[in-house]
Amino acid sequence: MTERIGEIIETDSFTFVAESFALNRPPALGSLVKAQAGGDTWVYGVVAFGETVSVDPGRGAMRRSRPDAYDEAVYTRHPELEHLLHTKFTVIPVGSRVGERMSQRIPPQPPPMHYSVYACAPDEVREFSERRLYLRTLATAQLPAPVEHVLAAHLTWTYEQRGRDEAWLEQAALEVAGLLQQDVERLLAVLYAVDPEA
Amino acid sequence: MPLDLSAIHPHIRALVDLQRPEERMRLLREARSVLQRADPDKVRDNLEVRNKRYPWLVANPLHSLGDTFPVPPLPVGGYSVAASDGSNIPPDRHSPVRYCILNVSKVVLAYGENPMASLTSVTEMLYKEEDLSLDGKPLKGELLGAKMAVRELEVLLETALALSAPRVALHDGTLILWPLQNQPDPVRDRFTRPFRRALDGFRAERIPLLSYISYPSARDLCNALRVALCDTETSECKTCESDHRELCEFLGQLRDRELLQGVLEPGERTDLFATVSDVVREYHGHDIVFCYLDVGGEIARVEMPKWVAEGEEALNLGLGVVLDQCALSGDVPPYPLALMEAHEAAVIDVAMRTVVEELVEGEFAQRGLPYIRSGKDRSKRRRGV
Image (cartoon, rainbow over all chains, first blue to last red; front, side):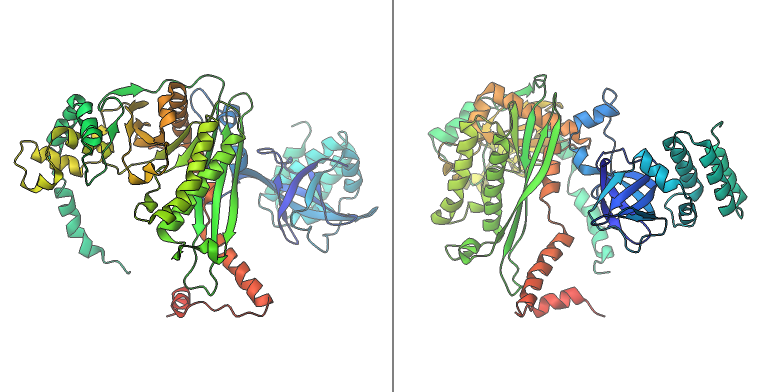
């Protein structure tokens, strides 16, 4: 079992938001994560956004640093910040698994509120990304960030997780090119971003 | 637009004119000069030996009237501070059932090698008749205020006991149970007894307890200067022909924080004064002492049990923690961070108040009981046009 990294605090059919257990460290943009959905059902999704904000929307963050205490020292001087701030990440569901059966369809039900989100191990990433139907789901989702950045982040992250699998990256890039053929600027943004030579 | 601003506007200028800035400055200079040279023995003598009664609160100087002291820096290695504050949902006259919710925060901030924070609260629901009234008086207004003050001090003690030294407990507001001032003895006793027990606990464990009053409106020190200026009875004030009359009347209108503005430098405190109040007499041996502290941008009043003031180490640690907490707040004027978080952890917001009411209403509905609020309340909520 991989590491529990967060708990779901907003959930609907097309998006879920989890609170990260590590303040200021949401999972990497574009990374594949999975949410427990009860029993042997799991929902797979791609991290499309991360943010650290005040727990109380009515209390904005304010400057805490001093000339002699900044960055990490701010947290040493203000241990209460661990309780007043939280880091959230948004995930786009792109597939699911029931028992051993993996699917790249949007799950019929959103993952339950307050259930856990886990990181995916490299083997699981490899298995899930063997087929790339889910890239279409990701490319057409309502994202909180520009789609080209999320796609590019996902492709480079998966490429690394698959042990720098260039054949996979080439295929994935071709598929993204097909998905974004109507929008050359976006396509170029993805292709430049994923170029291992860049 | 329910407020007619045009009706107020002409009066705002008149309000400012009333301040008479030049005259005020002259009298303030005189008052500050009296603060430096007045005889503290005369104040003590009038208050204690002659046992004169004054219709105002008078600061009783433990030592000097006008001396000031820098608060020494905190010892290196960090400290722990406990703080607590309270919020409540009072019994609602417009509701068919009477209940009261108390929420008292428990805040711990620890600094040093292992910094940590804990921001929680203790929530209680009172609904039995014996909890909602005292000697036939309903638990609301002043009595509810006293109840909150007692619970806050009890929770603060419980929180502070779990901390390792050096530790300080910060209470919000005054340590004097003013709401009890006009209450009959049996009612007073119901509150002063547990309050005293908590004060005993702080003393037994030697936990410096300090209470912090931001922007204090007290005039105790100004009144002490009036006592130092004059020997006559206050009943003769109206016919007074003394040279000091103008200054005395000015001091009667002046707040201690205004008197001390510029007298104290940031990080400095005044000397210590005992409070003179009937309520404190019922603390049986826990005299309450106070000083003023310039926290950088504001003169705050800090109250403490006398044993804290008498121990140099406890006093300096307590005031040092108050100053450090103010510096950590990052605000101008500052306010101790632990108390800020204690307030935040205690507060019951409007949404939560609604949730509580809906829970009660829902339980009534499930049991098939009617839950009908007053017509007046319904009309205010609906606000139809």
